[in-house]
Image (cartoon, rainbow over all chains, first blue to last red; front, side, top):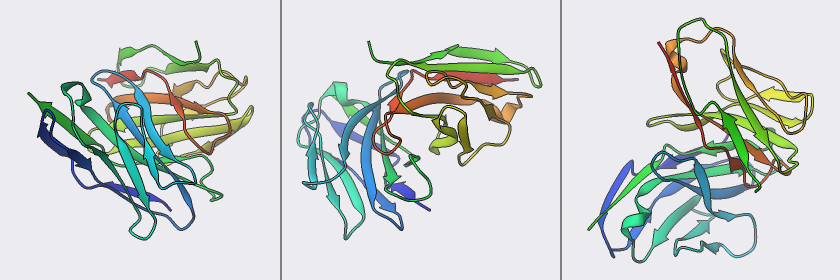
Length: 116
Length: 112
């Protein structure tokens, strides 16, 4: 069975400061990894994903995440946050070839609040 | 526009009154799924469907039913809703199941 742990439930930061949202996972098989973002009163949007290849993946709005297989982590980072980044962020994993075909297992979510 | 739609977006109902939340996607995706979101628990899968007429339970299927008679539609049925089913529900679809999923806007259900 797969599981995802987001180590911080809330992260407050000031505008233009760097931020890291931590995500650890466990799985008995290889995985795909995702970060989704949920803005207030909206659905989930894919922020970035790791399927294969380079372990560092980037989004169009300046976020990046690095897949670390040895530490089973997929932390999300941004060097300088903006007020508009205020949202809840979810880390998710999907087994490759496991019995739980297609299922996304989500972490508990991290609420990022950017203060002026 | 490629999208997943859900209806209704908001629903307040009473215990025991059967309800259906509809989900439709226009991307010709094989895989569809329902999740519920609760504070501090993230999203948990209720049911999923790999293709028409093929459905299976997720992590929290109790009290829910689904059907997949057409590729584009995947309704979620609560035969006898209870207050512990008060939650935010999301439908999602994916081309092949494995990989990213596209989410609908959510349905906020309150059962009193």
